[in-house]
Length: 321
Image (cartoon, rainbow, N blue to C red; front, top):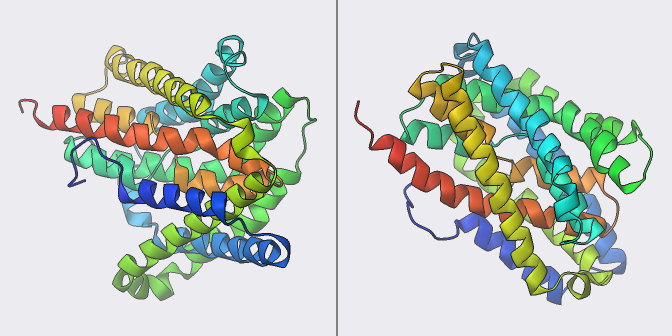
């Protein structure tokens, strides 16, 4: 949060580095299988540490503000997907079917946790409510996102509904998360002491999954199917989605009578989509090289939301008390 300027954050630069590495040196054969198994293990460790780090006390502190939480969850898991489907006639002529699949996937992802809370804090919003809403969004997203992927994303591609993605998420993501929560009383001090190293482990897990996903996509010819002009179109679509959602969250929260502090929480928690959850879920939910194409919209949306929310947080922070 110290970098209040229009520049890529370090994680985005590392993601671009992984894409470049996968583009020139994709893993193939036995190496691809080994990297795939390693990324699956790293994802399980990632969600175990998410469970171990999540403070129950902080979540309980903001839990009573149920109107705000329902609104944020409704925006995240209902309004976003409806918007993605409503824009289908406009978007499909502009992008390939795989990219539109990625846009729908972006729309069904949960909100971010760390950045939502950080932006709310900088903007002098309701931080305890932000902790609760962002955490609830990520926990519920483990269930809701795979269901929405089967109901909306894959069904939009002509594929029938299946509970298999939900079961995969439960086994590979939810069980490690629950194990982390159950063991938190025993390992809490260790987790707090090594928080910096664990954050790097989180980032390494995401970077590894991106490398594996894009490596598979490169082998299948992703860059022949996605020219530079298509990336610019995806960026403009991301800007359109973010603008619509931010207008709705801002003026909708005011019309519903929320305070300025609550409005800030609704704007920052309701308008964000989690790259940290989207990357490992895509690894589980989408087979083969399709995950690389599906991840393009969320990666561009991620950088865009950081830049826009940085400026917006400054404006909120500078308001008169």
